Every structure is written in structure tokens, then in C-alpha cells.
Image 1 (cartoon, one colour):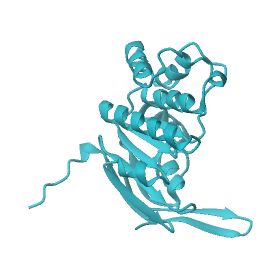
Image 2: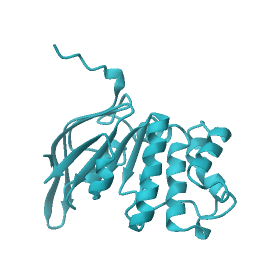
Image 3: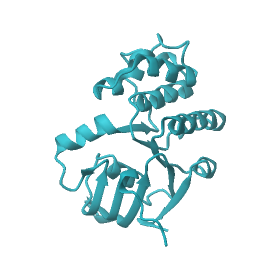
Image 4: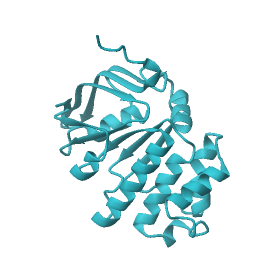
Length: 227
């Protein structure tokens, strides 16, 4: 007999998600009934061709956009009925986000950028932030500003910022897409190691077969459906 899954281990659950964008040229269906469960501590890679709906699915899970149909629960929050304030609180306190664009705050040094998300969540721990900085190879760069960093260094700051508040869920959208292959590989290895060490669940959108293979599980989107 199969064991009944412990729902306490589920950080995100999607059932029948649909999303269509309205354009001047007509409706463009992007997601056509997606079911997906993410469990605590696992890493899941979402792969697929451009336009298959990968980033749209990630944005729905992150509460950055709303589905047209289906059910989506993230960290106990029903995103189908959540208000904008509740979505913002979820992103602030429970989700770390890493994007292809580094999105660092130019007027803040590395130390302040690393602490930014954790302070918003009221979970800033200087000791944890310092350990993250060292683990990401940023210990000697804490007083520098984003414009003084290489692309790889900026993305490591963005990863540290997303993890500094110990979020139970981390979402990463092509996090190495703006980096050369060698730098991207090094940054990806660091990100996965740190996420696993913290016990966070990771949902990663990537075109890279190598990066996807490093995750615990892969799901493939084709024409808005999981293949």
C-alpha cells in the first residue's frame, strides 16, 4: 500500500492552472491545465522551449500574476482568493526570488543588498548573512556597490539576498542566463548547495540541460502543458 503523502511537506500545489494573455491580435493561451506539487526541501527544474509557459508558471507560484482558472496554494495561502496585500506578504516573508536580471539596488552596498529581503521579512540575522557572504565568495566585497561588481558577483549577491531570510521556497528564473558558461556553472553550483543546506524548496526555470540535471526532479512544459 502506498503511503499517504504528508501535506505538511507540500510548499506549493497547483491543480488545473490555466493562463491566457489578451493581445491586440487575439487571445494567447499560455498554460492549459497544469498540475504540479512542490515538496519541502526538493529542487525542481522546469524546462521547455521559449513560449511554453515556464516563466508564467513561476510567476503564478510567486504571486506575481493570477491564474485564469485552477487552484494554487503556496505555503498555505490560497492564491485564487488572496488579496494583493496577502500576495505581497507571502512574497516578502516566504519566498526568495532570483531572476536573470540581477535587480540589485544601486544605492546600497553588497552588505545592505544581502540584508534587504531579510529585513523586509523581519528575519535579518547578521551571523547568517555573514556566513552566506563567505559561502558565496563575497566576504571581501561587502563595502562595494553593484556597479563595482562583475556579472557573476552581482548574481551571487542576488542569490544571497534571496536566501538571507531562510525562505521555505526559492524561485529562480534563468538565474545564470546573463552569465558566461563557466561563471554560470559556478554560480549555479553555489545556489543549489546553499538552497539544500538551508532546506528550502527550489523551483528553477532553465534552458540548460546541465543545470536541470542537478535538480532532484525535472518537469517539462510543452505548449502550456506538462509533458
